[in-house]
Length: 311
Image (tube, rainbow, N blue to C red; front, side):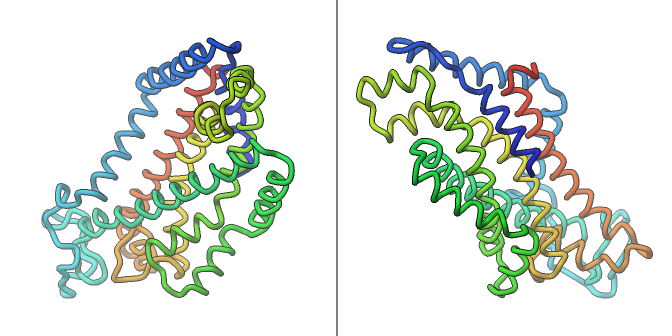
């Protein structure tokens, strides 16, 4: 986690595009636009990013439009055909209840991605706003927010999530997303804080302040666009981490519960059959690993594209 933070902070330092004062505000906008335009061109030419993005688009289509991938009802089960190996009728075989395993895994993409997207959106909004306020105002505002972050940093992530979910006793998509946001927002807040501190003393910010720009305008119009790059890098990588976190918590028995469908549930239900029917674990694990790896590769490519030193 510390390596990701430092890497993202490094991107923040390079994302700044200082320009002179006054009319140079337009120059600043052009430089910022040029940075993102150059990053977009580099990403399109990066085969690793393109392949990872295509994989994520396919998995996202599974989550949003599962009927495009299968016409089989994942809950249409027949115990007589439980644990049937892959065949022409069931390309992934059937699970322990006799349900089509391919349909189960297709429909299992939705809760896994929904939790990751909700949790990532939460930490970006809460952590980004907290880091923006702490970095911009400094002083007692920074001291209070930083001490709150330290309190949450002291909580072990996995242990804290298990304790919270055991106490709540209602494991739903929103419950898991809330717990992940609660424990993960300080990291992105610290990244944003560092980026804002390095951006708020640039010449174009002083120029805007000299002509009477309000604090809100300075933060959201001038500083935030220049400091958001490292947060986006970290958020992309965190999407994969949250997909993995959902599966981990579900495997440990404190995440989603049947009859819900997710890759974590598929892994938890079939772990004991690995030696007899390894495909029961290989299919959901393959989808899970592919999704997590794709988000990580996209985050790495985005970091490289936004860091001029790595071009």
